Length: 113
Length: 114
Image 1 (tube, rainbow over the protein chains, first blue to last red):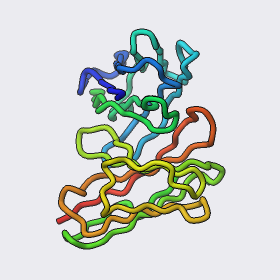
Image 2: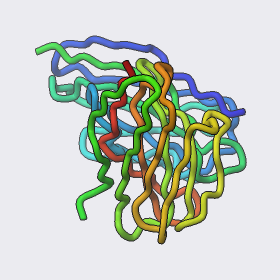
Image 3: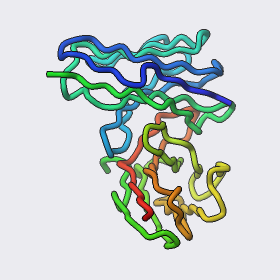
Image 4: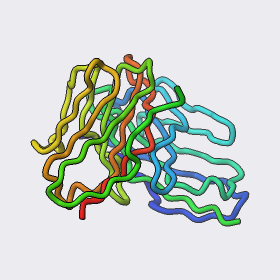
């Protein structure tokens, strides 16, 4: 069974600092990895999708890396802003299914002005 | 079409009542999923549709839960005889058919059973 872990559970940084969020998974035979953002009481917004053949993916201030062999992904957010405060979740397709996502519990980020 | 739409956004119901939620996926997406999320946890998979066919149901989906996707368009999730443990955020997602395509989620329905 695929297990996804995100450490730390919470993070508080001053505005302008770079954020580093970690995600680890137990089964390295993944098709891809997806990072999501969730604001309190809201749904999930897809941030980045990295295919298994890719090492990294970038979108604006966001950069996600993937190391399948070690079962890790890292989401970097450059020059954090108070508007980046949210919970960030990573997810991978579970086992042999390419559609059913296994999620971590998320990292809740607070960016202090 | 701006994304996955869910209705209602919030539902408060008394224990023992039935509730039904609706999800409208992105129009060209064949795949539709339901997930449940409790406080402080990541979403957990409930069920999956490919067009109108329900292809997988999680063991989390007890007999009190039923989901449909008539004509392969919108989907409904019904919970009968609600229990306090059913209180959670119910999330719907959709994606294109294909190997591990990107999933897009709706805003969720927050259910509170009192």
